[in-house]
Amino acid sequence: MKGIDHIGIAVNDLDSASATYERLLGKPRYKTEHVEAEEVKTAFFSCGDSKIELLESAHENSTISRFIGKRGEGIHHIAFQVDDIREEIRRLKAAGFDFSVEEPRVGADNKLFCFLHPRKTHGVLVELCQEIKEATDRRGKSFD
Ligand code: ZN
Image (cartoon, rainbow, N blue to C red; front, side, top):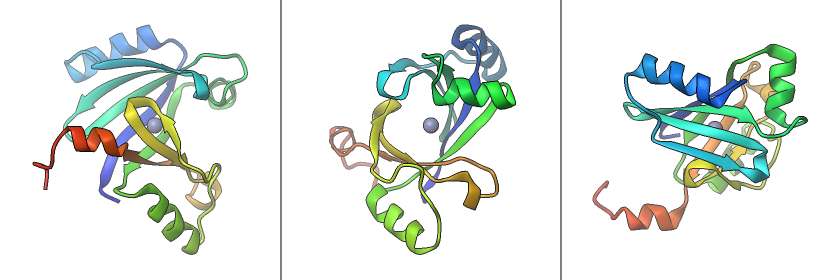
């Protein structure tokens, strides 16, 4: 685990929540994205090395709308950045964690992601995310 990539917050309305977080963080969102496969609209804000991801449901029966129906708006997940998502999945399964979806999928912000089941993480929905390789390569090797 390299660090916290982002914190996901479930919101009723992406635009009004974005306005709130713009005021809070003192800067505009840098990206808005509709991820059809996940039935979600997202807005991203950078904050130091981490990000805030606002999530609005794009469908009545999506994961986000069910979450808000049960618990209201609020923190939905914490995402950890990893170098090799498949390797981390193997490591965490061997360590006794469960996954809601084991095969990593392509999600918002050009990332591969998967979710651990919150029953083994004390009620917190944990996401693993890995930068998609081509993107990493396009940015060059100057990071190491
Ligand atoms: Zn996320």
